[in-house]
Length: 329
View 1 (cartoon, rainbow, N blue to C red):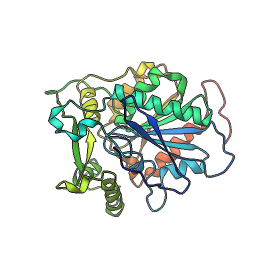
View 2: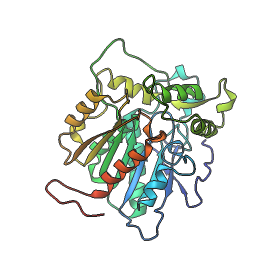
View 3: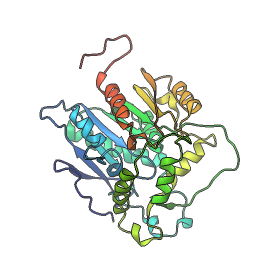
View 4: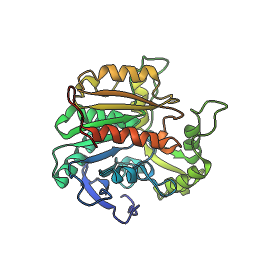
């Protein structure tokens, strides 16, 4: 089954909850607010994207400080979920077989039930009715599908680098069950969106440290040449389907406040995509579309990540509703 996850902070707690797949469990990591006595209702669940889990995203520390640390300092209870096949959650049984033997593993509809299981567990444990979601890339598809089905569990949603529907162009892509993702694959996608002549937004030093920890997350990664982490392919399939005109959820079903945050250079969420998603979420009581300068699809790992932190925190904290004055901090 899955590897034992090391604690990334002495205060971190680990939990396992049942997944919809019999015999396979989901991994949750939790870090409480930095100050005791923080309001129990201020709870955030992070929903990762399609190639790396919570340890390598919201919980990863650059120079000793993570996005999770920032949210905890602001008084939030912060949770991170690893979907099946990622991080410390159990892998799919099919990941032990050749990838061509099965269709893509971990489609958005299935993963939204995994997310629901995690959300219900967290709400019970924290004795709250709802929590807020912070989701990235493919994870925004999963979060959107879940929020549309279970609005009673969701307070607010931050979608950064979200995926949107596009008009079909060219032949459809069909992927196998899983795929290996190497450090070269990651580096190329991390730097590909920065325009020619612009200074880098991700330091090589930070990436090298991140990369070793990324490989550590899969005990078999270094048995491959080049070293690579196995990940379910359905995240890529869901994205390719969205760009072929088939979107996994109806944005009009979102009925909670939502913020779209994207980078100036995010090719996976350009202006047209953000506009389609923003317009589609017409039933959300509050909508915001925020663009961060000198940032790409992977802004949470880049030098302008603190702008992402601030925008996310401001949206999650303020509690404003249409026609109401938001409370002072």
